[in-house]
Each structure stands twice: as C-alpha cells, then as structure tokens.
Length: 404
Image (cartoon, rainbow, N blue to C red; front, side, top):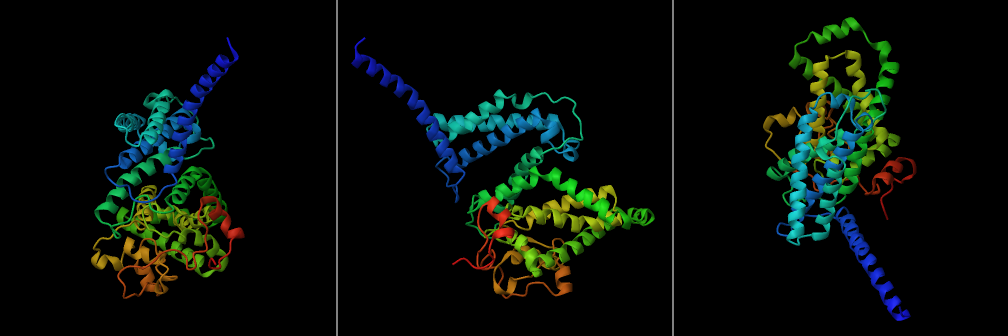
C-alpha cells in the first residue's frame, strides 16, 4: 500500500473516531450549559419537555442507586414509612415518561443534544436494574446519606409548590428557574444528604446537654393533653424558642455572619428557604428541639409538628399570594415571611416568628409598612457571594461590607 493511501486510511480512521467523540463532547457541553441557565422556559421550543425528561431521568437514576445500596443511601426513619412497591411503580412510570419525552424530541429533532443526554440517563438507569433492583434485608444502624429523602422531597416539593406558585403567584412573571436556583438546589441537596449526621449531632447534644432537665412525671402529664391542644402547644413552644434564636441571629454580629447566608437570596420561591449555613442548621435545630425534648410531647404530636414545620418552611418562602384575612395576624404566611427577607428599610430585623405571627406583634417586632409587598430582597449591600461552597466559607473569611 502506498504511503499516500496509508495516510488517507489513517485520516479516515481518525475522523471516524473523532466524530463520535466530538458529538459526545457537544452533548456533555450542552447539558452542562443547561444547568447553568436561568430564566423562563418558553413554550414551543421543547425546553419544558426537555427539562422534565432530564429531571425525571436524573431522579430515577439516583433512585436506582439508592435501591442498590439502601443501608448507606436511605434514611432509616423514612424507609420504614414508605412502600418499596409503590416507589417501584412510580419509578417505572417516571422512566417511561422521561424516556418517551426524550426519545420523541430526538426523533422530532427538538433540543436533540439535550434529549440524547436525557435518554442516555434513562438507558443507564434501566441498565442498572431500573425499578426491578432487588432489595434484600440489611442492617439499620449504618452511616447513611439521605438520598431517598432528597429524591422524594425534591419530586414532591416540585409537584406541589410549583403548581401552587403558578396558580397563586405573588410575582406573576417570575421564572421557575430564576437566577441563582443552582446555588439553592445545592443547599437543598446538602441539607438532605447530611441529614443523618445532623440528626446524630442534634440527638447527642439533646441527650447529653438537656437530659438532666427531663422529668418523666411532667412529660406524662403533657402527653395526656388531647392531641390538637398538645400539637398547638408544641408548635408554640418550638416557635418561642425559634423566635429568640432567630432574633439572636439578627442582633448578635457573630451569629449574623452565618444567618446572612440565608438572607442573601434575592428571589423568593419554594427553593429559597433551603439556602442556609450548615452550622446554623444544626444550632437552630438544637435550640428548637431542646424544649420539645424536655417537655416530652407525644410521638404522634412530634410527627405532626415535623409535617407542619416542613410544610411552612417551604410554603412561607414560596412565590405565593393568597387572601388570609384576620389569619395574617395569627399565623405566619408567605406575605408575612417575605417581609422578613426584604431589604426595605422598614423590614430590617422584623417578623422573626416561623409559625405564629402574633409573637411578633406581642414582642413589638412585626413589620409596619404602608406598602403591600416588599420592593427588594436580600442583604443590604449584597455582600454575600453566590455559590454553595463560598457561602459555607463566608462566615469565616467574608466581609459584611457592601460590594464596591
């Protein structure tokens, strides 16, 4: 074979290898770019179906991985409550929807590269066992990451709160994928992944730091209170502790450096409340759960309280406006809590309560404003950096001076 022919053959082989590699690189680059975008998903460009296919595919893949290693990737308190069979059926449907949407978009040449990536994720999830991964017996007392809690909570919160925000929006033009949503999603994930470590620390502190305060006879008296009054009393005790801890975060400069991370969010929606420094998350849980542990509320009441606080923590940050009437002076609502996150002059260091708004009226810290809604959100001076890691480091090396 002549030298020129050998060179031609080599170039053809190189081109045959490079073209698939270039295509794969282009798919990866466009997928990475998707997760850096923000703004409204406009109908007619297949971005809504593409985003749905990608999200469901990723959640299913994470669910399959959790099925493979349940002792390390699932939350013990949670896995005893849900049905694996129901989860399998839900995953099967989600895989069908994700695969169907992505494949249809590929065939129709709509957002082709992104949908190739989404379909590849579905194929990988199915190849790893899909919804048929066997789950045998395994020990309960192992170190774990709350991957199942992350998947279920993200899916459930998205389905519930995005719908509520679209039906009853405070700001009608606000996009689901608003600016800095990536940072808050990382906070959301981190808060769920380290739930085991957080609960371990909190339980150790409660039992060793407050165990001497526990009176079994007093706790039995509390547990004999009927369910509804006991629940209302539990929420009140928790909110009183939370109110003063929250107020300390605002009024003590050292504590504010940690709490400023939470206040740095400039767009309010269901995901905004996830932005929180990890040390604040642990400290606040100790402060709130300590009096509940000492008072000894019943297990059923504590379970109900966890549901209430979980819902309100998300709902009160949501982009939602509803007519509350006189209830706005009793309960904390999105309207009430939005003022707490506002950087308007009249909103600074106001509206601390998490459940009962009357506490702020009682202690003189309720917002008094002629404006119906805040004009702007975030910390005054906008000095907290964006990015999960930078925000975790901010209390130790950041500056609280306004950016120049």
